[in-house]
Length: 122
Image (cartoon, rainbow, N blue to C red; front, side, top):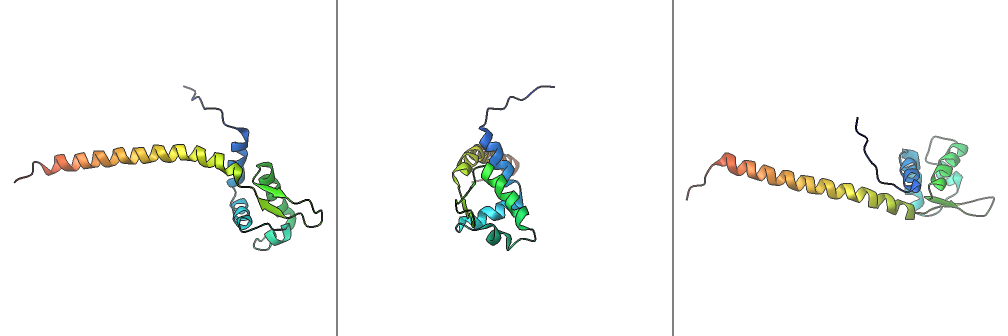
């Protein structure tokens, strides 16, 4: 079996994708895009406890996607979108691959259409 070499990726990229894999964490990030919020404010739309939301926030913090305020009583969370930029760059390579593949498929289909229609008459 042949091994596939994978280019070295920053460990932070793995953490960002792992954090984004969960729909609750994506919803938390969407909420934080509107502005900072406390754990209790983030818990409101979910059917889960504050400790469960806090665990999600810790995953987002480890990925660098969220930072927490210093006020010990409120500790508002805020979105830190910069780590997503690396993920977007990584995904962009695949978007370019698929765009090129679709262009090639379009060309092939056009060629097949021309050959199946036969010669055109004046």
